[in-house]
Length: 402
Image (cartoon, rainbow, N blue to C red; front, side, top):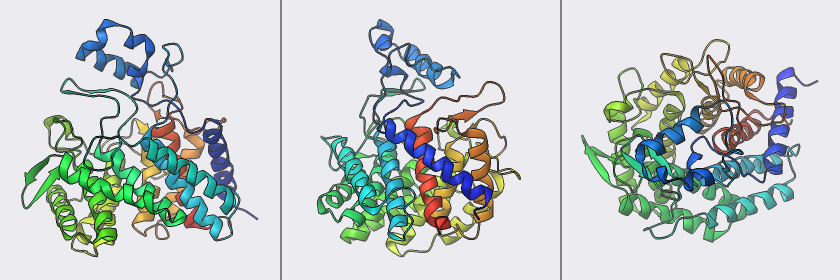
């Protein structure tokens, strides 16, 4: 007989999968306010303060204003990549005889569909394959990211998804596109020297150049390139980014978000990104010299960002807002680090809390829970794609189909 958690999990994933497929993986995003046809018709779209206020109003409002203000549901490259990663995990489960969420044939069709969609979303005009977001984004008053401005964050998720797709489909074109992203990192991103290493910029646009997790995601891309192409320079350049990030790790294992004065917070899911990226670097290059950094980072992660009942915390020193990224990322990070079996009870507790408190009866997951009015809007990339990928990882790792 199935345990209550197994039954709850299977029902939850089935509902989420059905919801996302019915929407064809299109949806809204916390930051897509400037896609409003109303806003684009107004002259204030040229004013940075108005852009910032408009985006933050959409992001913070517990009421979804998008239908009223004509924001269309669209594909987001990072969201598509996360869905592709999740379907690749479900395919591996199906290979093991676990077909509750699709047969090998059916899942392969879905993988091919999402792979082609992701390839079509690639941004042209740069040294290698890269991806951005489907909306204009005003980051404070410092800079404006126009729609499809490539970022290393979106690109890293797309690269990993295409590599996982290649492992299944054996499509050489898919792998070649993913590998070319190394040239985007080396040629199109800027680098800031730090100690014996460097920090890759967040994007091709200047102004957000010292974000630790973004730099590590650049290293992650280069490490994949080294694994498949054996270009020594790529391993060297990746290592320098890891060196800088580990130098910036505090003695207790924590990381701040970035080096700008306004980026000194410590949060859960970016810590997960950091650990995932360093672990991927080590696996791809066989350079294990950063294991101590990983170990103390993992200990800090699980001891400071989750409460005893499984409730995920956003920040190390306060709980709210509870963001759906947090429970999703810890499952993926544990899987990447081969820590799933050792922490299965911990992960099960967090997953149970998340399903009970952050999933709609319609199948989608909420964005954030706050002390006051929570945001229960369905965001396709931020909420549903992250949870779909996490739950597919959980399904494969826990062998719940057996």
